[in-house]
Picture 1 (spheres, rainbow, N blue to C red):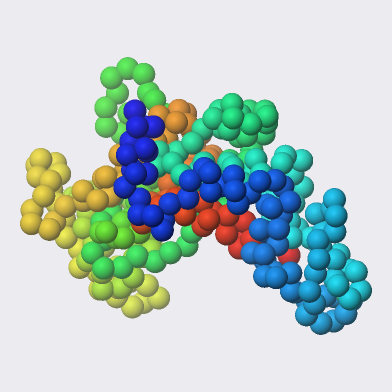
Picture 2: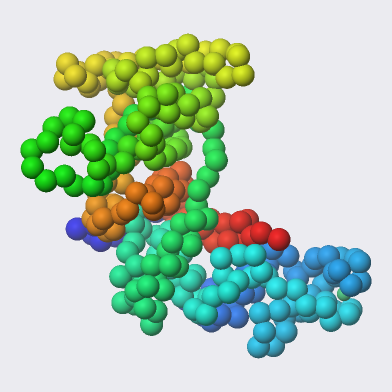
Length: 312
Ligand SMILES: [Zn+2]
């Protein structure tokens, strides 16, 4: 079912945003091509500072090593150093393929799938995805008409508990979306309502219109301040308890659409996700959502994160 949807989605991707599996095979036929790609991301044309020469120098690949050598003095530099790939014993191409799969799906990808398609164990596959997800957390600001909402995730409770009891084993998630724009989603496990207000202040730029439901946590949104200055939010509410969902442009349908996307995805692909890792799954979904106009090139964005997140 999900596969079918993915196929239809792919066919509607404009030519310049397509990146097929054949393209992947052509661009990354082996591990050498992968390490060369990371090297080019970090040091285009192999030119970077050489500690020995104390100057910008061109570097050439050292055969059978993950190193590049300075063309003048031979000093080695390592493009994988400080990246998630630094100490791996798994083929770089398998890593790249895992990123390709993660970037090509709408609904998420399971460690089982990469285990089936390559020679890695389930444990290795799971760790690879965990590492890749760790690159996808973003710190962005939202503006203009935004919608904020909260939802509960995971922790199935047996029996007919209702209300607060039903939510006991669940994790609260807060989400903020720009209409037709980007999204931020954060686990919000503390029960205090202040936390939702703090998230709004952290991510929504001043003077934005913010649509929420009637939940009391949002009561003071229009009076919110930062560093003593009023943020000037224009707060509009829809009264869901009265079964009213849309009044003119007052609704939270965009953020609710995002909730159903991640619930379908995480529920369908990952089954049970523990609280500990839920944020990284939210990061994966938001990363893709925020690049939904990039077609299959989301893979390239994930790949770029490998170098961007390299630590010296
Ligand atoms: Zn040198």
